[in-house]
Every structure is written in structure tokens, then in C-alpha cells.
Length: 361
Image 1 (tube, rainbow, N blue to C red):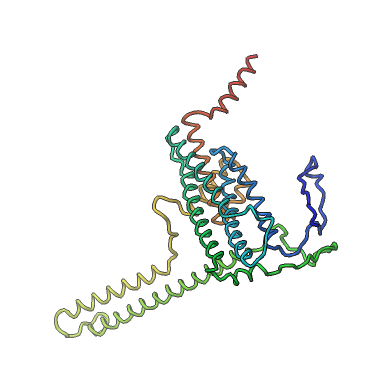
Image 2: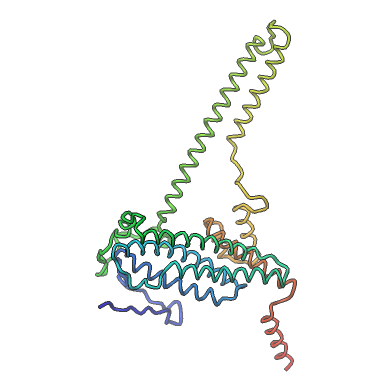
């Protein structure tokens, strides 16, 4: 019979009183599909609930939305895997509630909530909430991906898609036992125990990016060499026409002019070749900031607020994390703009009135 583990939160009063945990407190048996999906389904449902009740204009709501989006994407993939395994006759009692339909309902709720926030700010405060418009597009995109996944699941159930390759991936390490039942000392400790291992997908993307950069650099070098060779060829032709630099052979009128044109073309080619060697400016959408410019704005904002944690984190953040921080920053700027134009929100005004009444007494 399976035992149910009850997890507890922080029961001590002080952080300094927190006790160390046993090295083998948890099993190190490789994760299997049902356990993984059930845990993430449970966590995502909790995030969904808090995102539903959070005030649509609060910073917490945007934080919840960001995490909810990640969870729904992963769970959509799990729904596909679940369909494959169920097609092979495997049952998952812990995942009966997990479905694409439930994920679509989550997305639909928050699309409507984001639109209500956008419409409300524009109607009452004459401010265009770009953060909420961005979320509308993100929810629509995720909704379309979920619907495409549901179509694929239906094809799997109808036997139109071969599921063997997907099955092999999910069966890897299945049924293996834990190896840390007895307390063990690690053979070696990392130099930096706080550092996380490099994600496999990220590693592949980095390798892919490096290959593309190397390929592009090779193409640029070949183009540069081609231009320089062509420039040399034009110089030689000009020299033959004039009998060498400063000498003009009697080839008839106009030969010296043609030589001059070839030399000018050769010089232009050399300049183009030189331009190819210069680093290019990052591509950008007109009217939008580059990642470097956005990072600079966020650092300046953190300096104004004396936020030392943000100052240390921003230079090291990857593009996705930086984008999430930028969305929170723009949402805060929008709220501050509203408050500066129309004063503090009603709840703040009420609190200030109560405070003034107490002072009078």
C-alpha cells in the first residue's frame, strides 16, 4: 500500500534555528512520468488559483502569470505523453484530471483577465497598458499551441501517429530503485555548490549558436577574400593599361580614364571588405530597445531604488529572465504614472484618511 507523505513548511521562529536535513531524506531514484507530471500538475494548479485571485494590477499577478505560462507549456507536453502511454494500455490514476481542456480553460481565464486590465486602464486612466496587451498575445499563442496538441492527441488515439519513439523516451530509467537509502557522503563536492548544472536544451542551443556564428564568420571571411582578390585584379588591369603607376601607354584616348575607374572600383571593394570585418550592431525592431539598452535602463532604475540584489542579478540574467524583469518594470512604471496623475488608489486614500482621523483624536 502506498504511503502518503505530509510535507511541512517552516515551523521554527528564526532562520538561524533551521536544522540540517538528512542527506538521504528523499529518494534519488530516477523520476518517472506519473510522479513528475502529478507534482507539476499540483504546483501549477496552486499557481493558477493565486493568479485568479490576485489583483490584476498588482506586481504579484504578473509574476504568477509568468510561472503559470511555463507550467501550462510543460503540462501540455505531458498531456501528449500521457495519451501515448494510455494508447499502449498504461493507466495513470493520479493524472485523471490533467487534460488539454483544463489547460485551455486556464489560458482562457487569464486572457480575459489581461484584456479587462488593458481595457480598464485605458478607459479610466487614459494609459495604454502594453504589459497586458503583451500578455493577451502570449495567452492567444499558447491557446493555439494547446489546440494543436489536442489535435495530435486525437490522431494518436485514432492510430494515425506512430507512438513508439515517444514511448522509448518515457520508458528510459523506468522502474529503477533509489541508491541512497543509506546515508552516504558525496564523493566530491562542487567548487560552487550553489551553481546549477547546465540545462541540456540550453547547451544544445549554445552549441547550435556557436556553430552558426562560426559558419557566418567563415562566409564573411570568404566574401572578404573574394573582394580583395577582385580589387587586386582591377589594379593589375589598370597597371597594364597605363604601363604602371604614373606611366601612360599610347593605347589611344580614354584608356587612362578606364584605368582610373578600375582603380576607383578596386578601392571601393577594399573598403567593403574592411566593413565586413567590423562588428555589426545588434538587430532591433524600430522604436524598441535592444537587450543591452533594456539592461542599462533596469540597472539605472535599481540604482535609483538602491536595490543591491537587483544590481547584482541584472548583469548576469539571461534573455528570458531579463524580459520578465522588464515586463514587471514597465507595469510598475505604468502604475506609478496612473497614481501620479490621479493620486493614490482608493484603498491607499482610505488608509490615509483613517490615519489622519487617528491623529486628530
